[in-house]
Amino acid sequence: MNTVVARFPETLAVVRLGPGTDVPAWAESSSVFAIIATATETTLVCAARSVPGKAPAIRPLTAFQVKADAGSRGSTAAALAGAATEVGAEVLAYDTFEHTWLLVPVASADAVEEEWRRRGHTVAPAVPVRS
Image (spheres, one colour):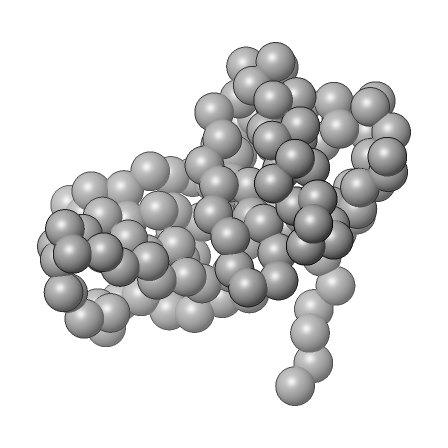
């Protein structure tokens, strides 16, 4: 199965905020920007360059967008994440309505991409969306 994966150029961070926290003024949107809120926490995925040094964050990260059919997204993402961990990369994953996103440390991104290609997947630079 040939999965298409888009690699995004921005360096990202996953930031932990308190429950019910509004999006802070320093958070700027980039081509990858997400807010995930539960009753116990608010998590923000954003450009790493804007995150204050004191904010609890995981960074620097590279985002990969997995392009798979809705029926196979879970298994496809699991296979890609498994391949990434086999080359020693940690993987953070989340879903939007249409895609699965895999975030890996910048230092591991090239090795992860190479492993996915070795396994027959297509990895290409993300194409900017014009509005």
